[in-house]
Length: 247
Image (cartoon, rainbow, N blue to C red; front, side, top):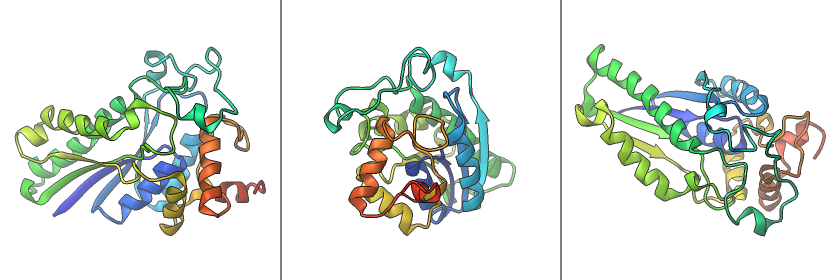
């Protein structure tokens, strides 16, 4: 069985860990990074370095128009909608915050599936690969335990998305090759994710999780708070802060 896969690599802790996880489990892996009109490119720059360190094929795709479509978000319109800071654990786990980008994962999944389907259809129809010997996997890094409450980070969302992608694709309807969405950290705590990343020797010191784009993480946004909590509970220093001399 030949496994073709794409991994969505944002440049953050979670997606870097999942991309490192995917690398050892598939035959043909491409990491996809989307520049979607987010307020800063820090995470995107990190993704480029991380893909190089992991030695995986990498595609940086400019979909910056999404910032105009999904405009009601602090990540795409920070001047209009400030990023919340210093929220308590109870606040972070309650409701959907303004950092949610409308339907972002739905759009990302569709683009990832289109890229993967193109690769596999070419293998079948041009290179005469046997469809029965092929698997198609999309690796993503959503988390439903230590997360900010985004609706598109829940297991039930990905169950429905899998069926939608299959039913809308030539790959499934003609060749019987169905997309599988792999979400290996969906039920892991941030501490367990940090430990897994270290075990996989993922370049966590190059990752960026902060919603701000400064020289060092702000320490106050939801993402920084959750990341700090994870490394603290894992009992290990954050490799990024150690590299920056902030640990």
